[in-house]
Amino acid sequence: MDWCLWRLASTYHLLIHSDWVDAVSKRLFTNISGKVLLKYIVDGLMLGGFVLIILTGMVISTWLGVSLSNYTSWLTIHMISSMTTLLALMVKLALHWRWISKQPGRS
Image 1 (cartoon, rainbow, N blue to C red):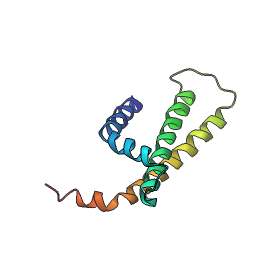
Image 2 (cartoon, one colour):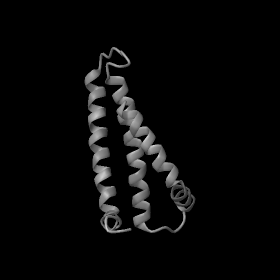
Image 3 (tube, one colour):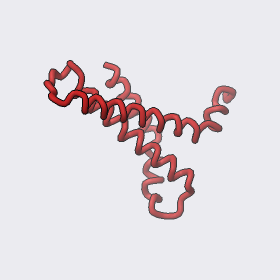
Image 4 (cartoon, rainbow, N blue to C red):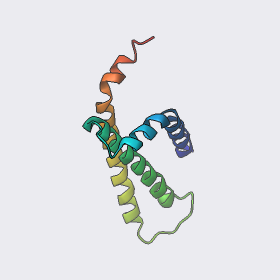
């Protein structure tokens, strides 16, 4: 159930910011600032990480009932993708910290 809520929230977030994704994607191979490119890469890493977390989580869960002879490998991929995605999230928060810190006082 948790992954359904995450999927709904991430889809909503992507729809809200689809204009930014579209604009940056079109300008990706032209002159853009390094910070914008870094944000784009971090967002891509997070997307890939969340996809891996969901897929490997479904495979190793008892919910699907998949019998695995290499459970440890799937679990390792799941754990590494989780930690990498968490690191990417921390980088994203650091890149946006000035904007985040100004939001509570904003009315």
